[in-house]
Length: 235
Image (tube, rainbow, N blue to C red):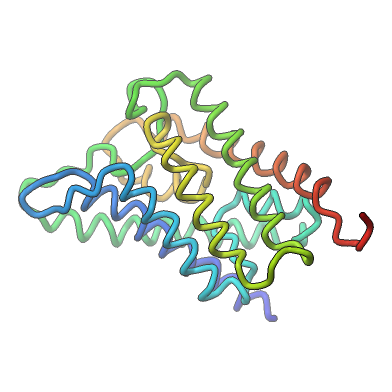
């Protein structure tokens, strides 16, 4: 598969992830005259559904990473080429920024609308529950590691074929249900970067946490997944 096709798949998959997931948070999470008021549970499901759909749609093209932490975690797990990591991450970040720009254009079409946090991630005053930086880091490291363990396990040669996107989408839904009150859930540096560029808060100043913590968690999860999953046929 040509690299350019893989990069387009990663761009598009990340674009839909941010537009669908963050779009649900910006446009529909809170109850109002023109919104459904889907709340944390609805936003969590939106993120899970976008990953599930995109994994089925273009996962066979690029592997369906849509996330720098997943890319680097899969490199650590021996499931992705290190040489492709840089281009993949660039495509993911550009896809996230493009989606955030589209979302901003849509949301700003409502009279009196202001960006506020714009579905960005944060700790302290920028945390939905005002959780500390330590709590945010632990949450992002642990849950990203769990996410990678699910990804590596569900895509193992010995796992039931064809069900990986479902397991991965449900895992991301669960992660959001846990982490939205703490950090507004990143586990994805590209997703964090795209919306932070448009937020009115100090989200950009805290963005480093949502690169470092998910990547550390992703690599740890990839290594743990590699240890747990032996596709060599040995018991």
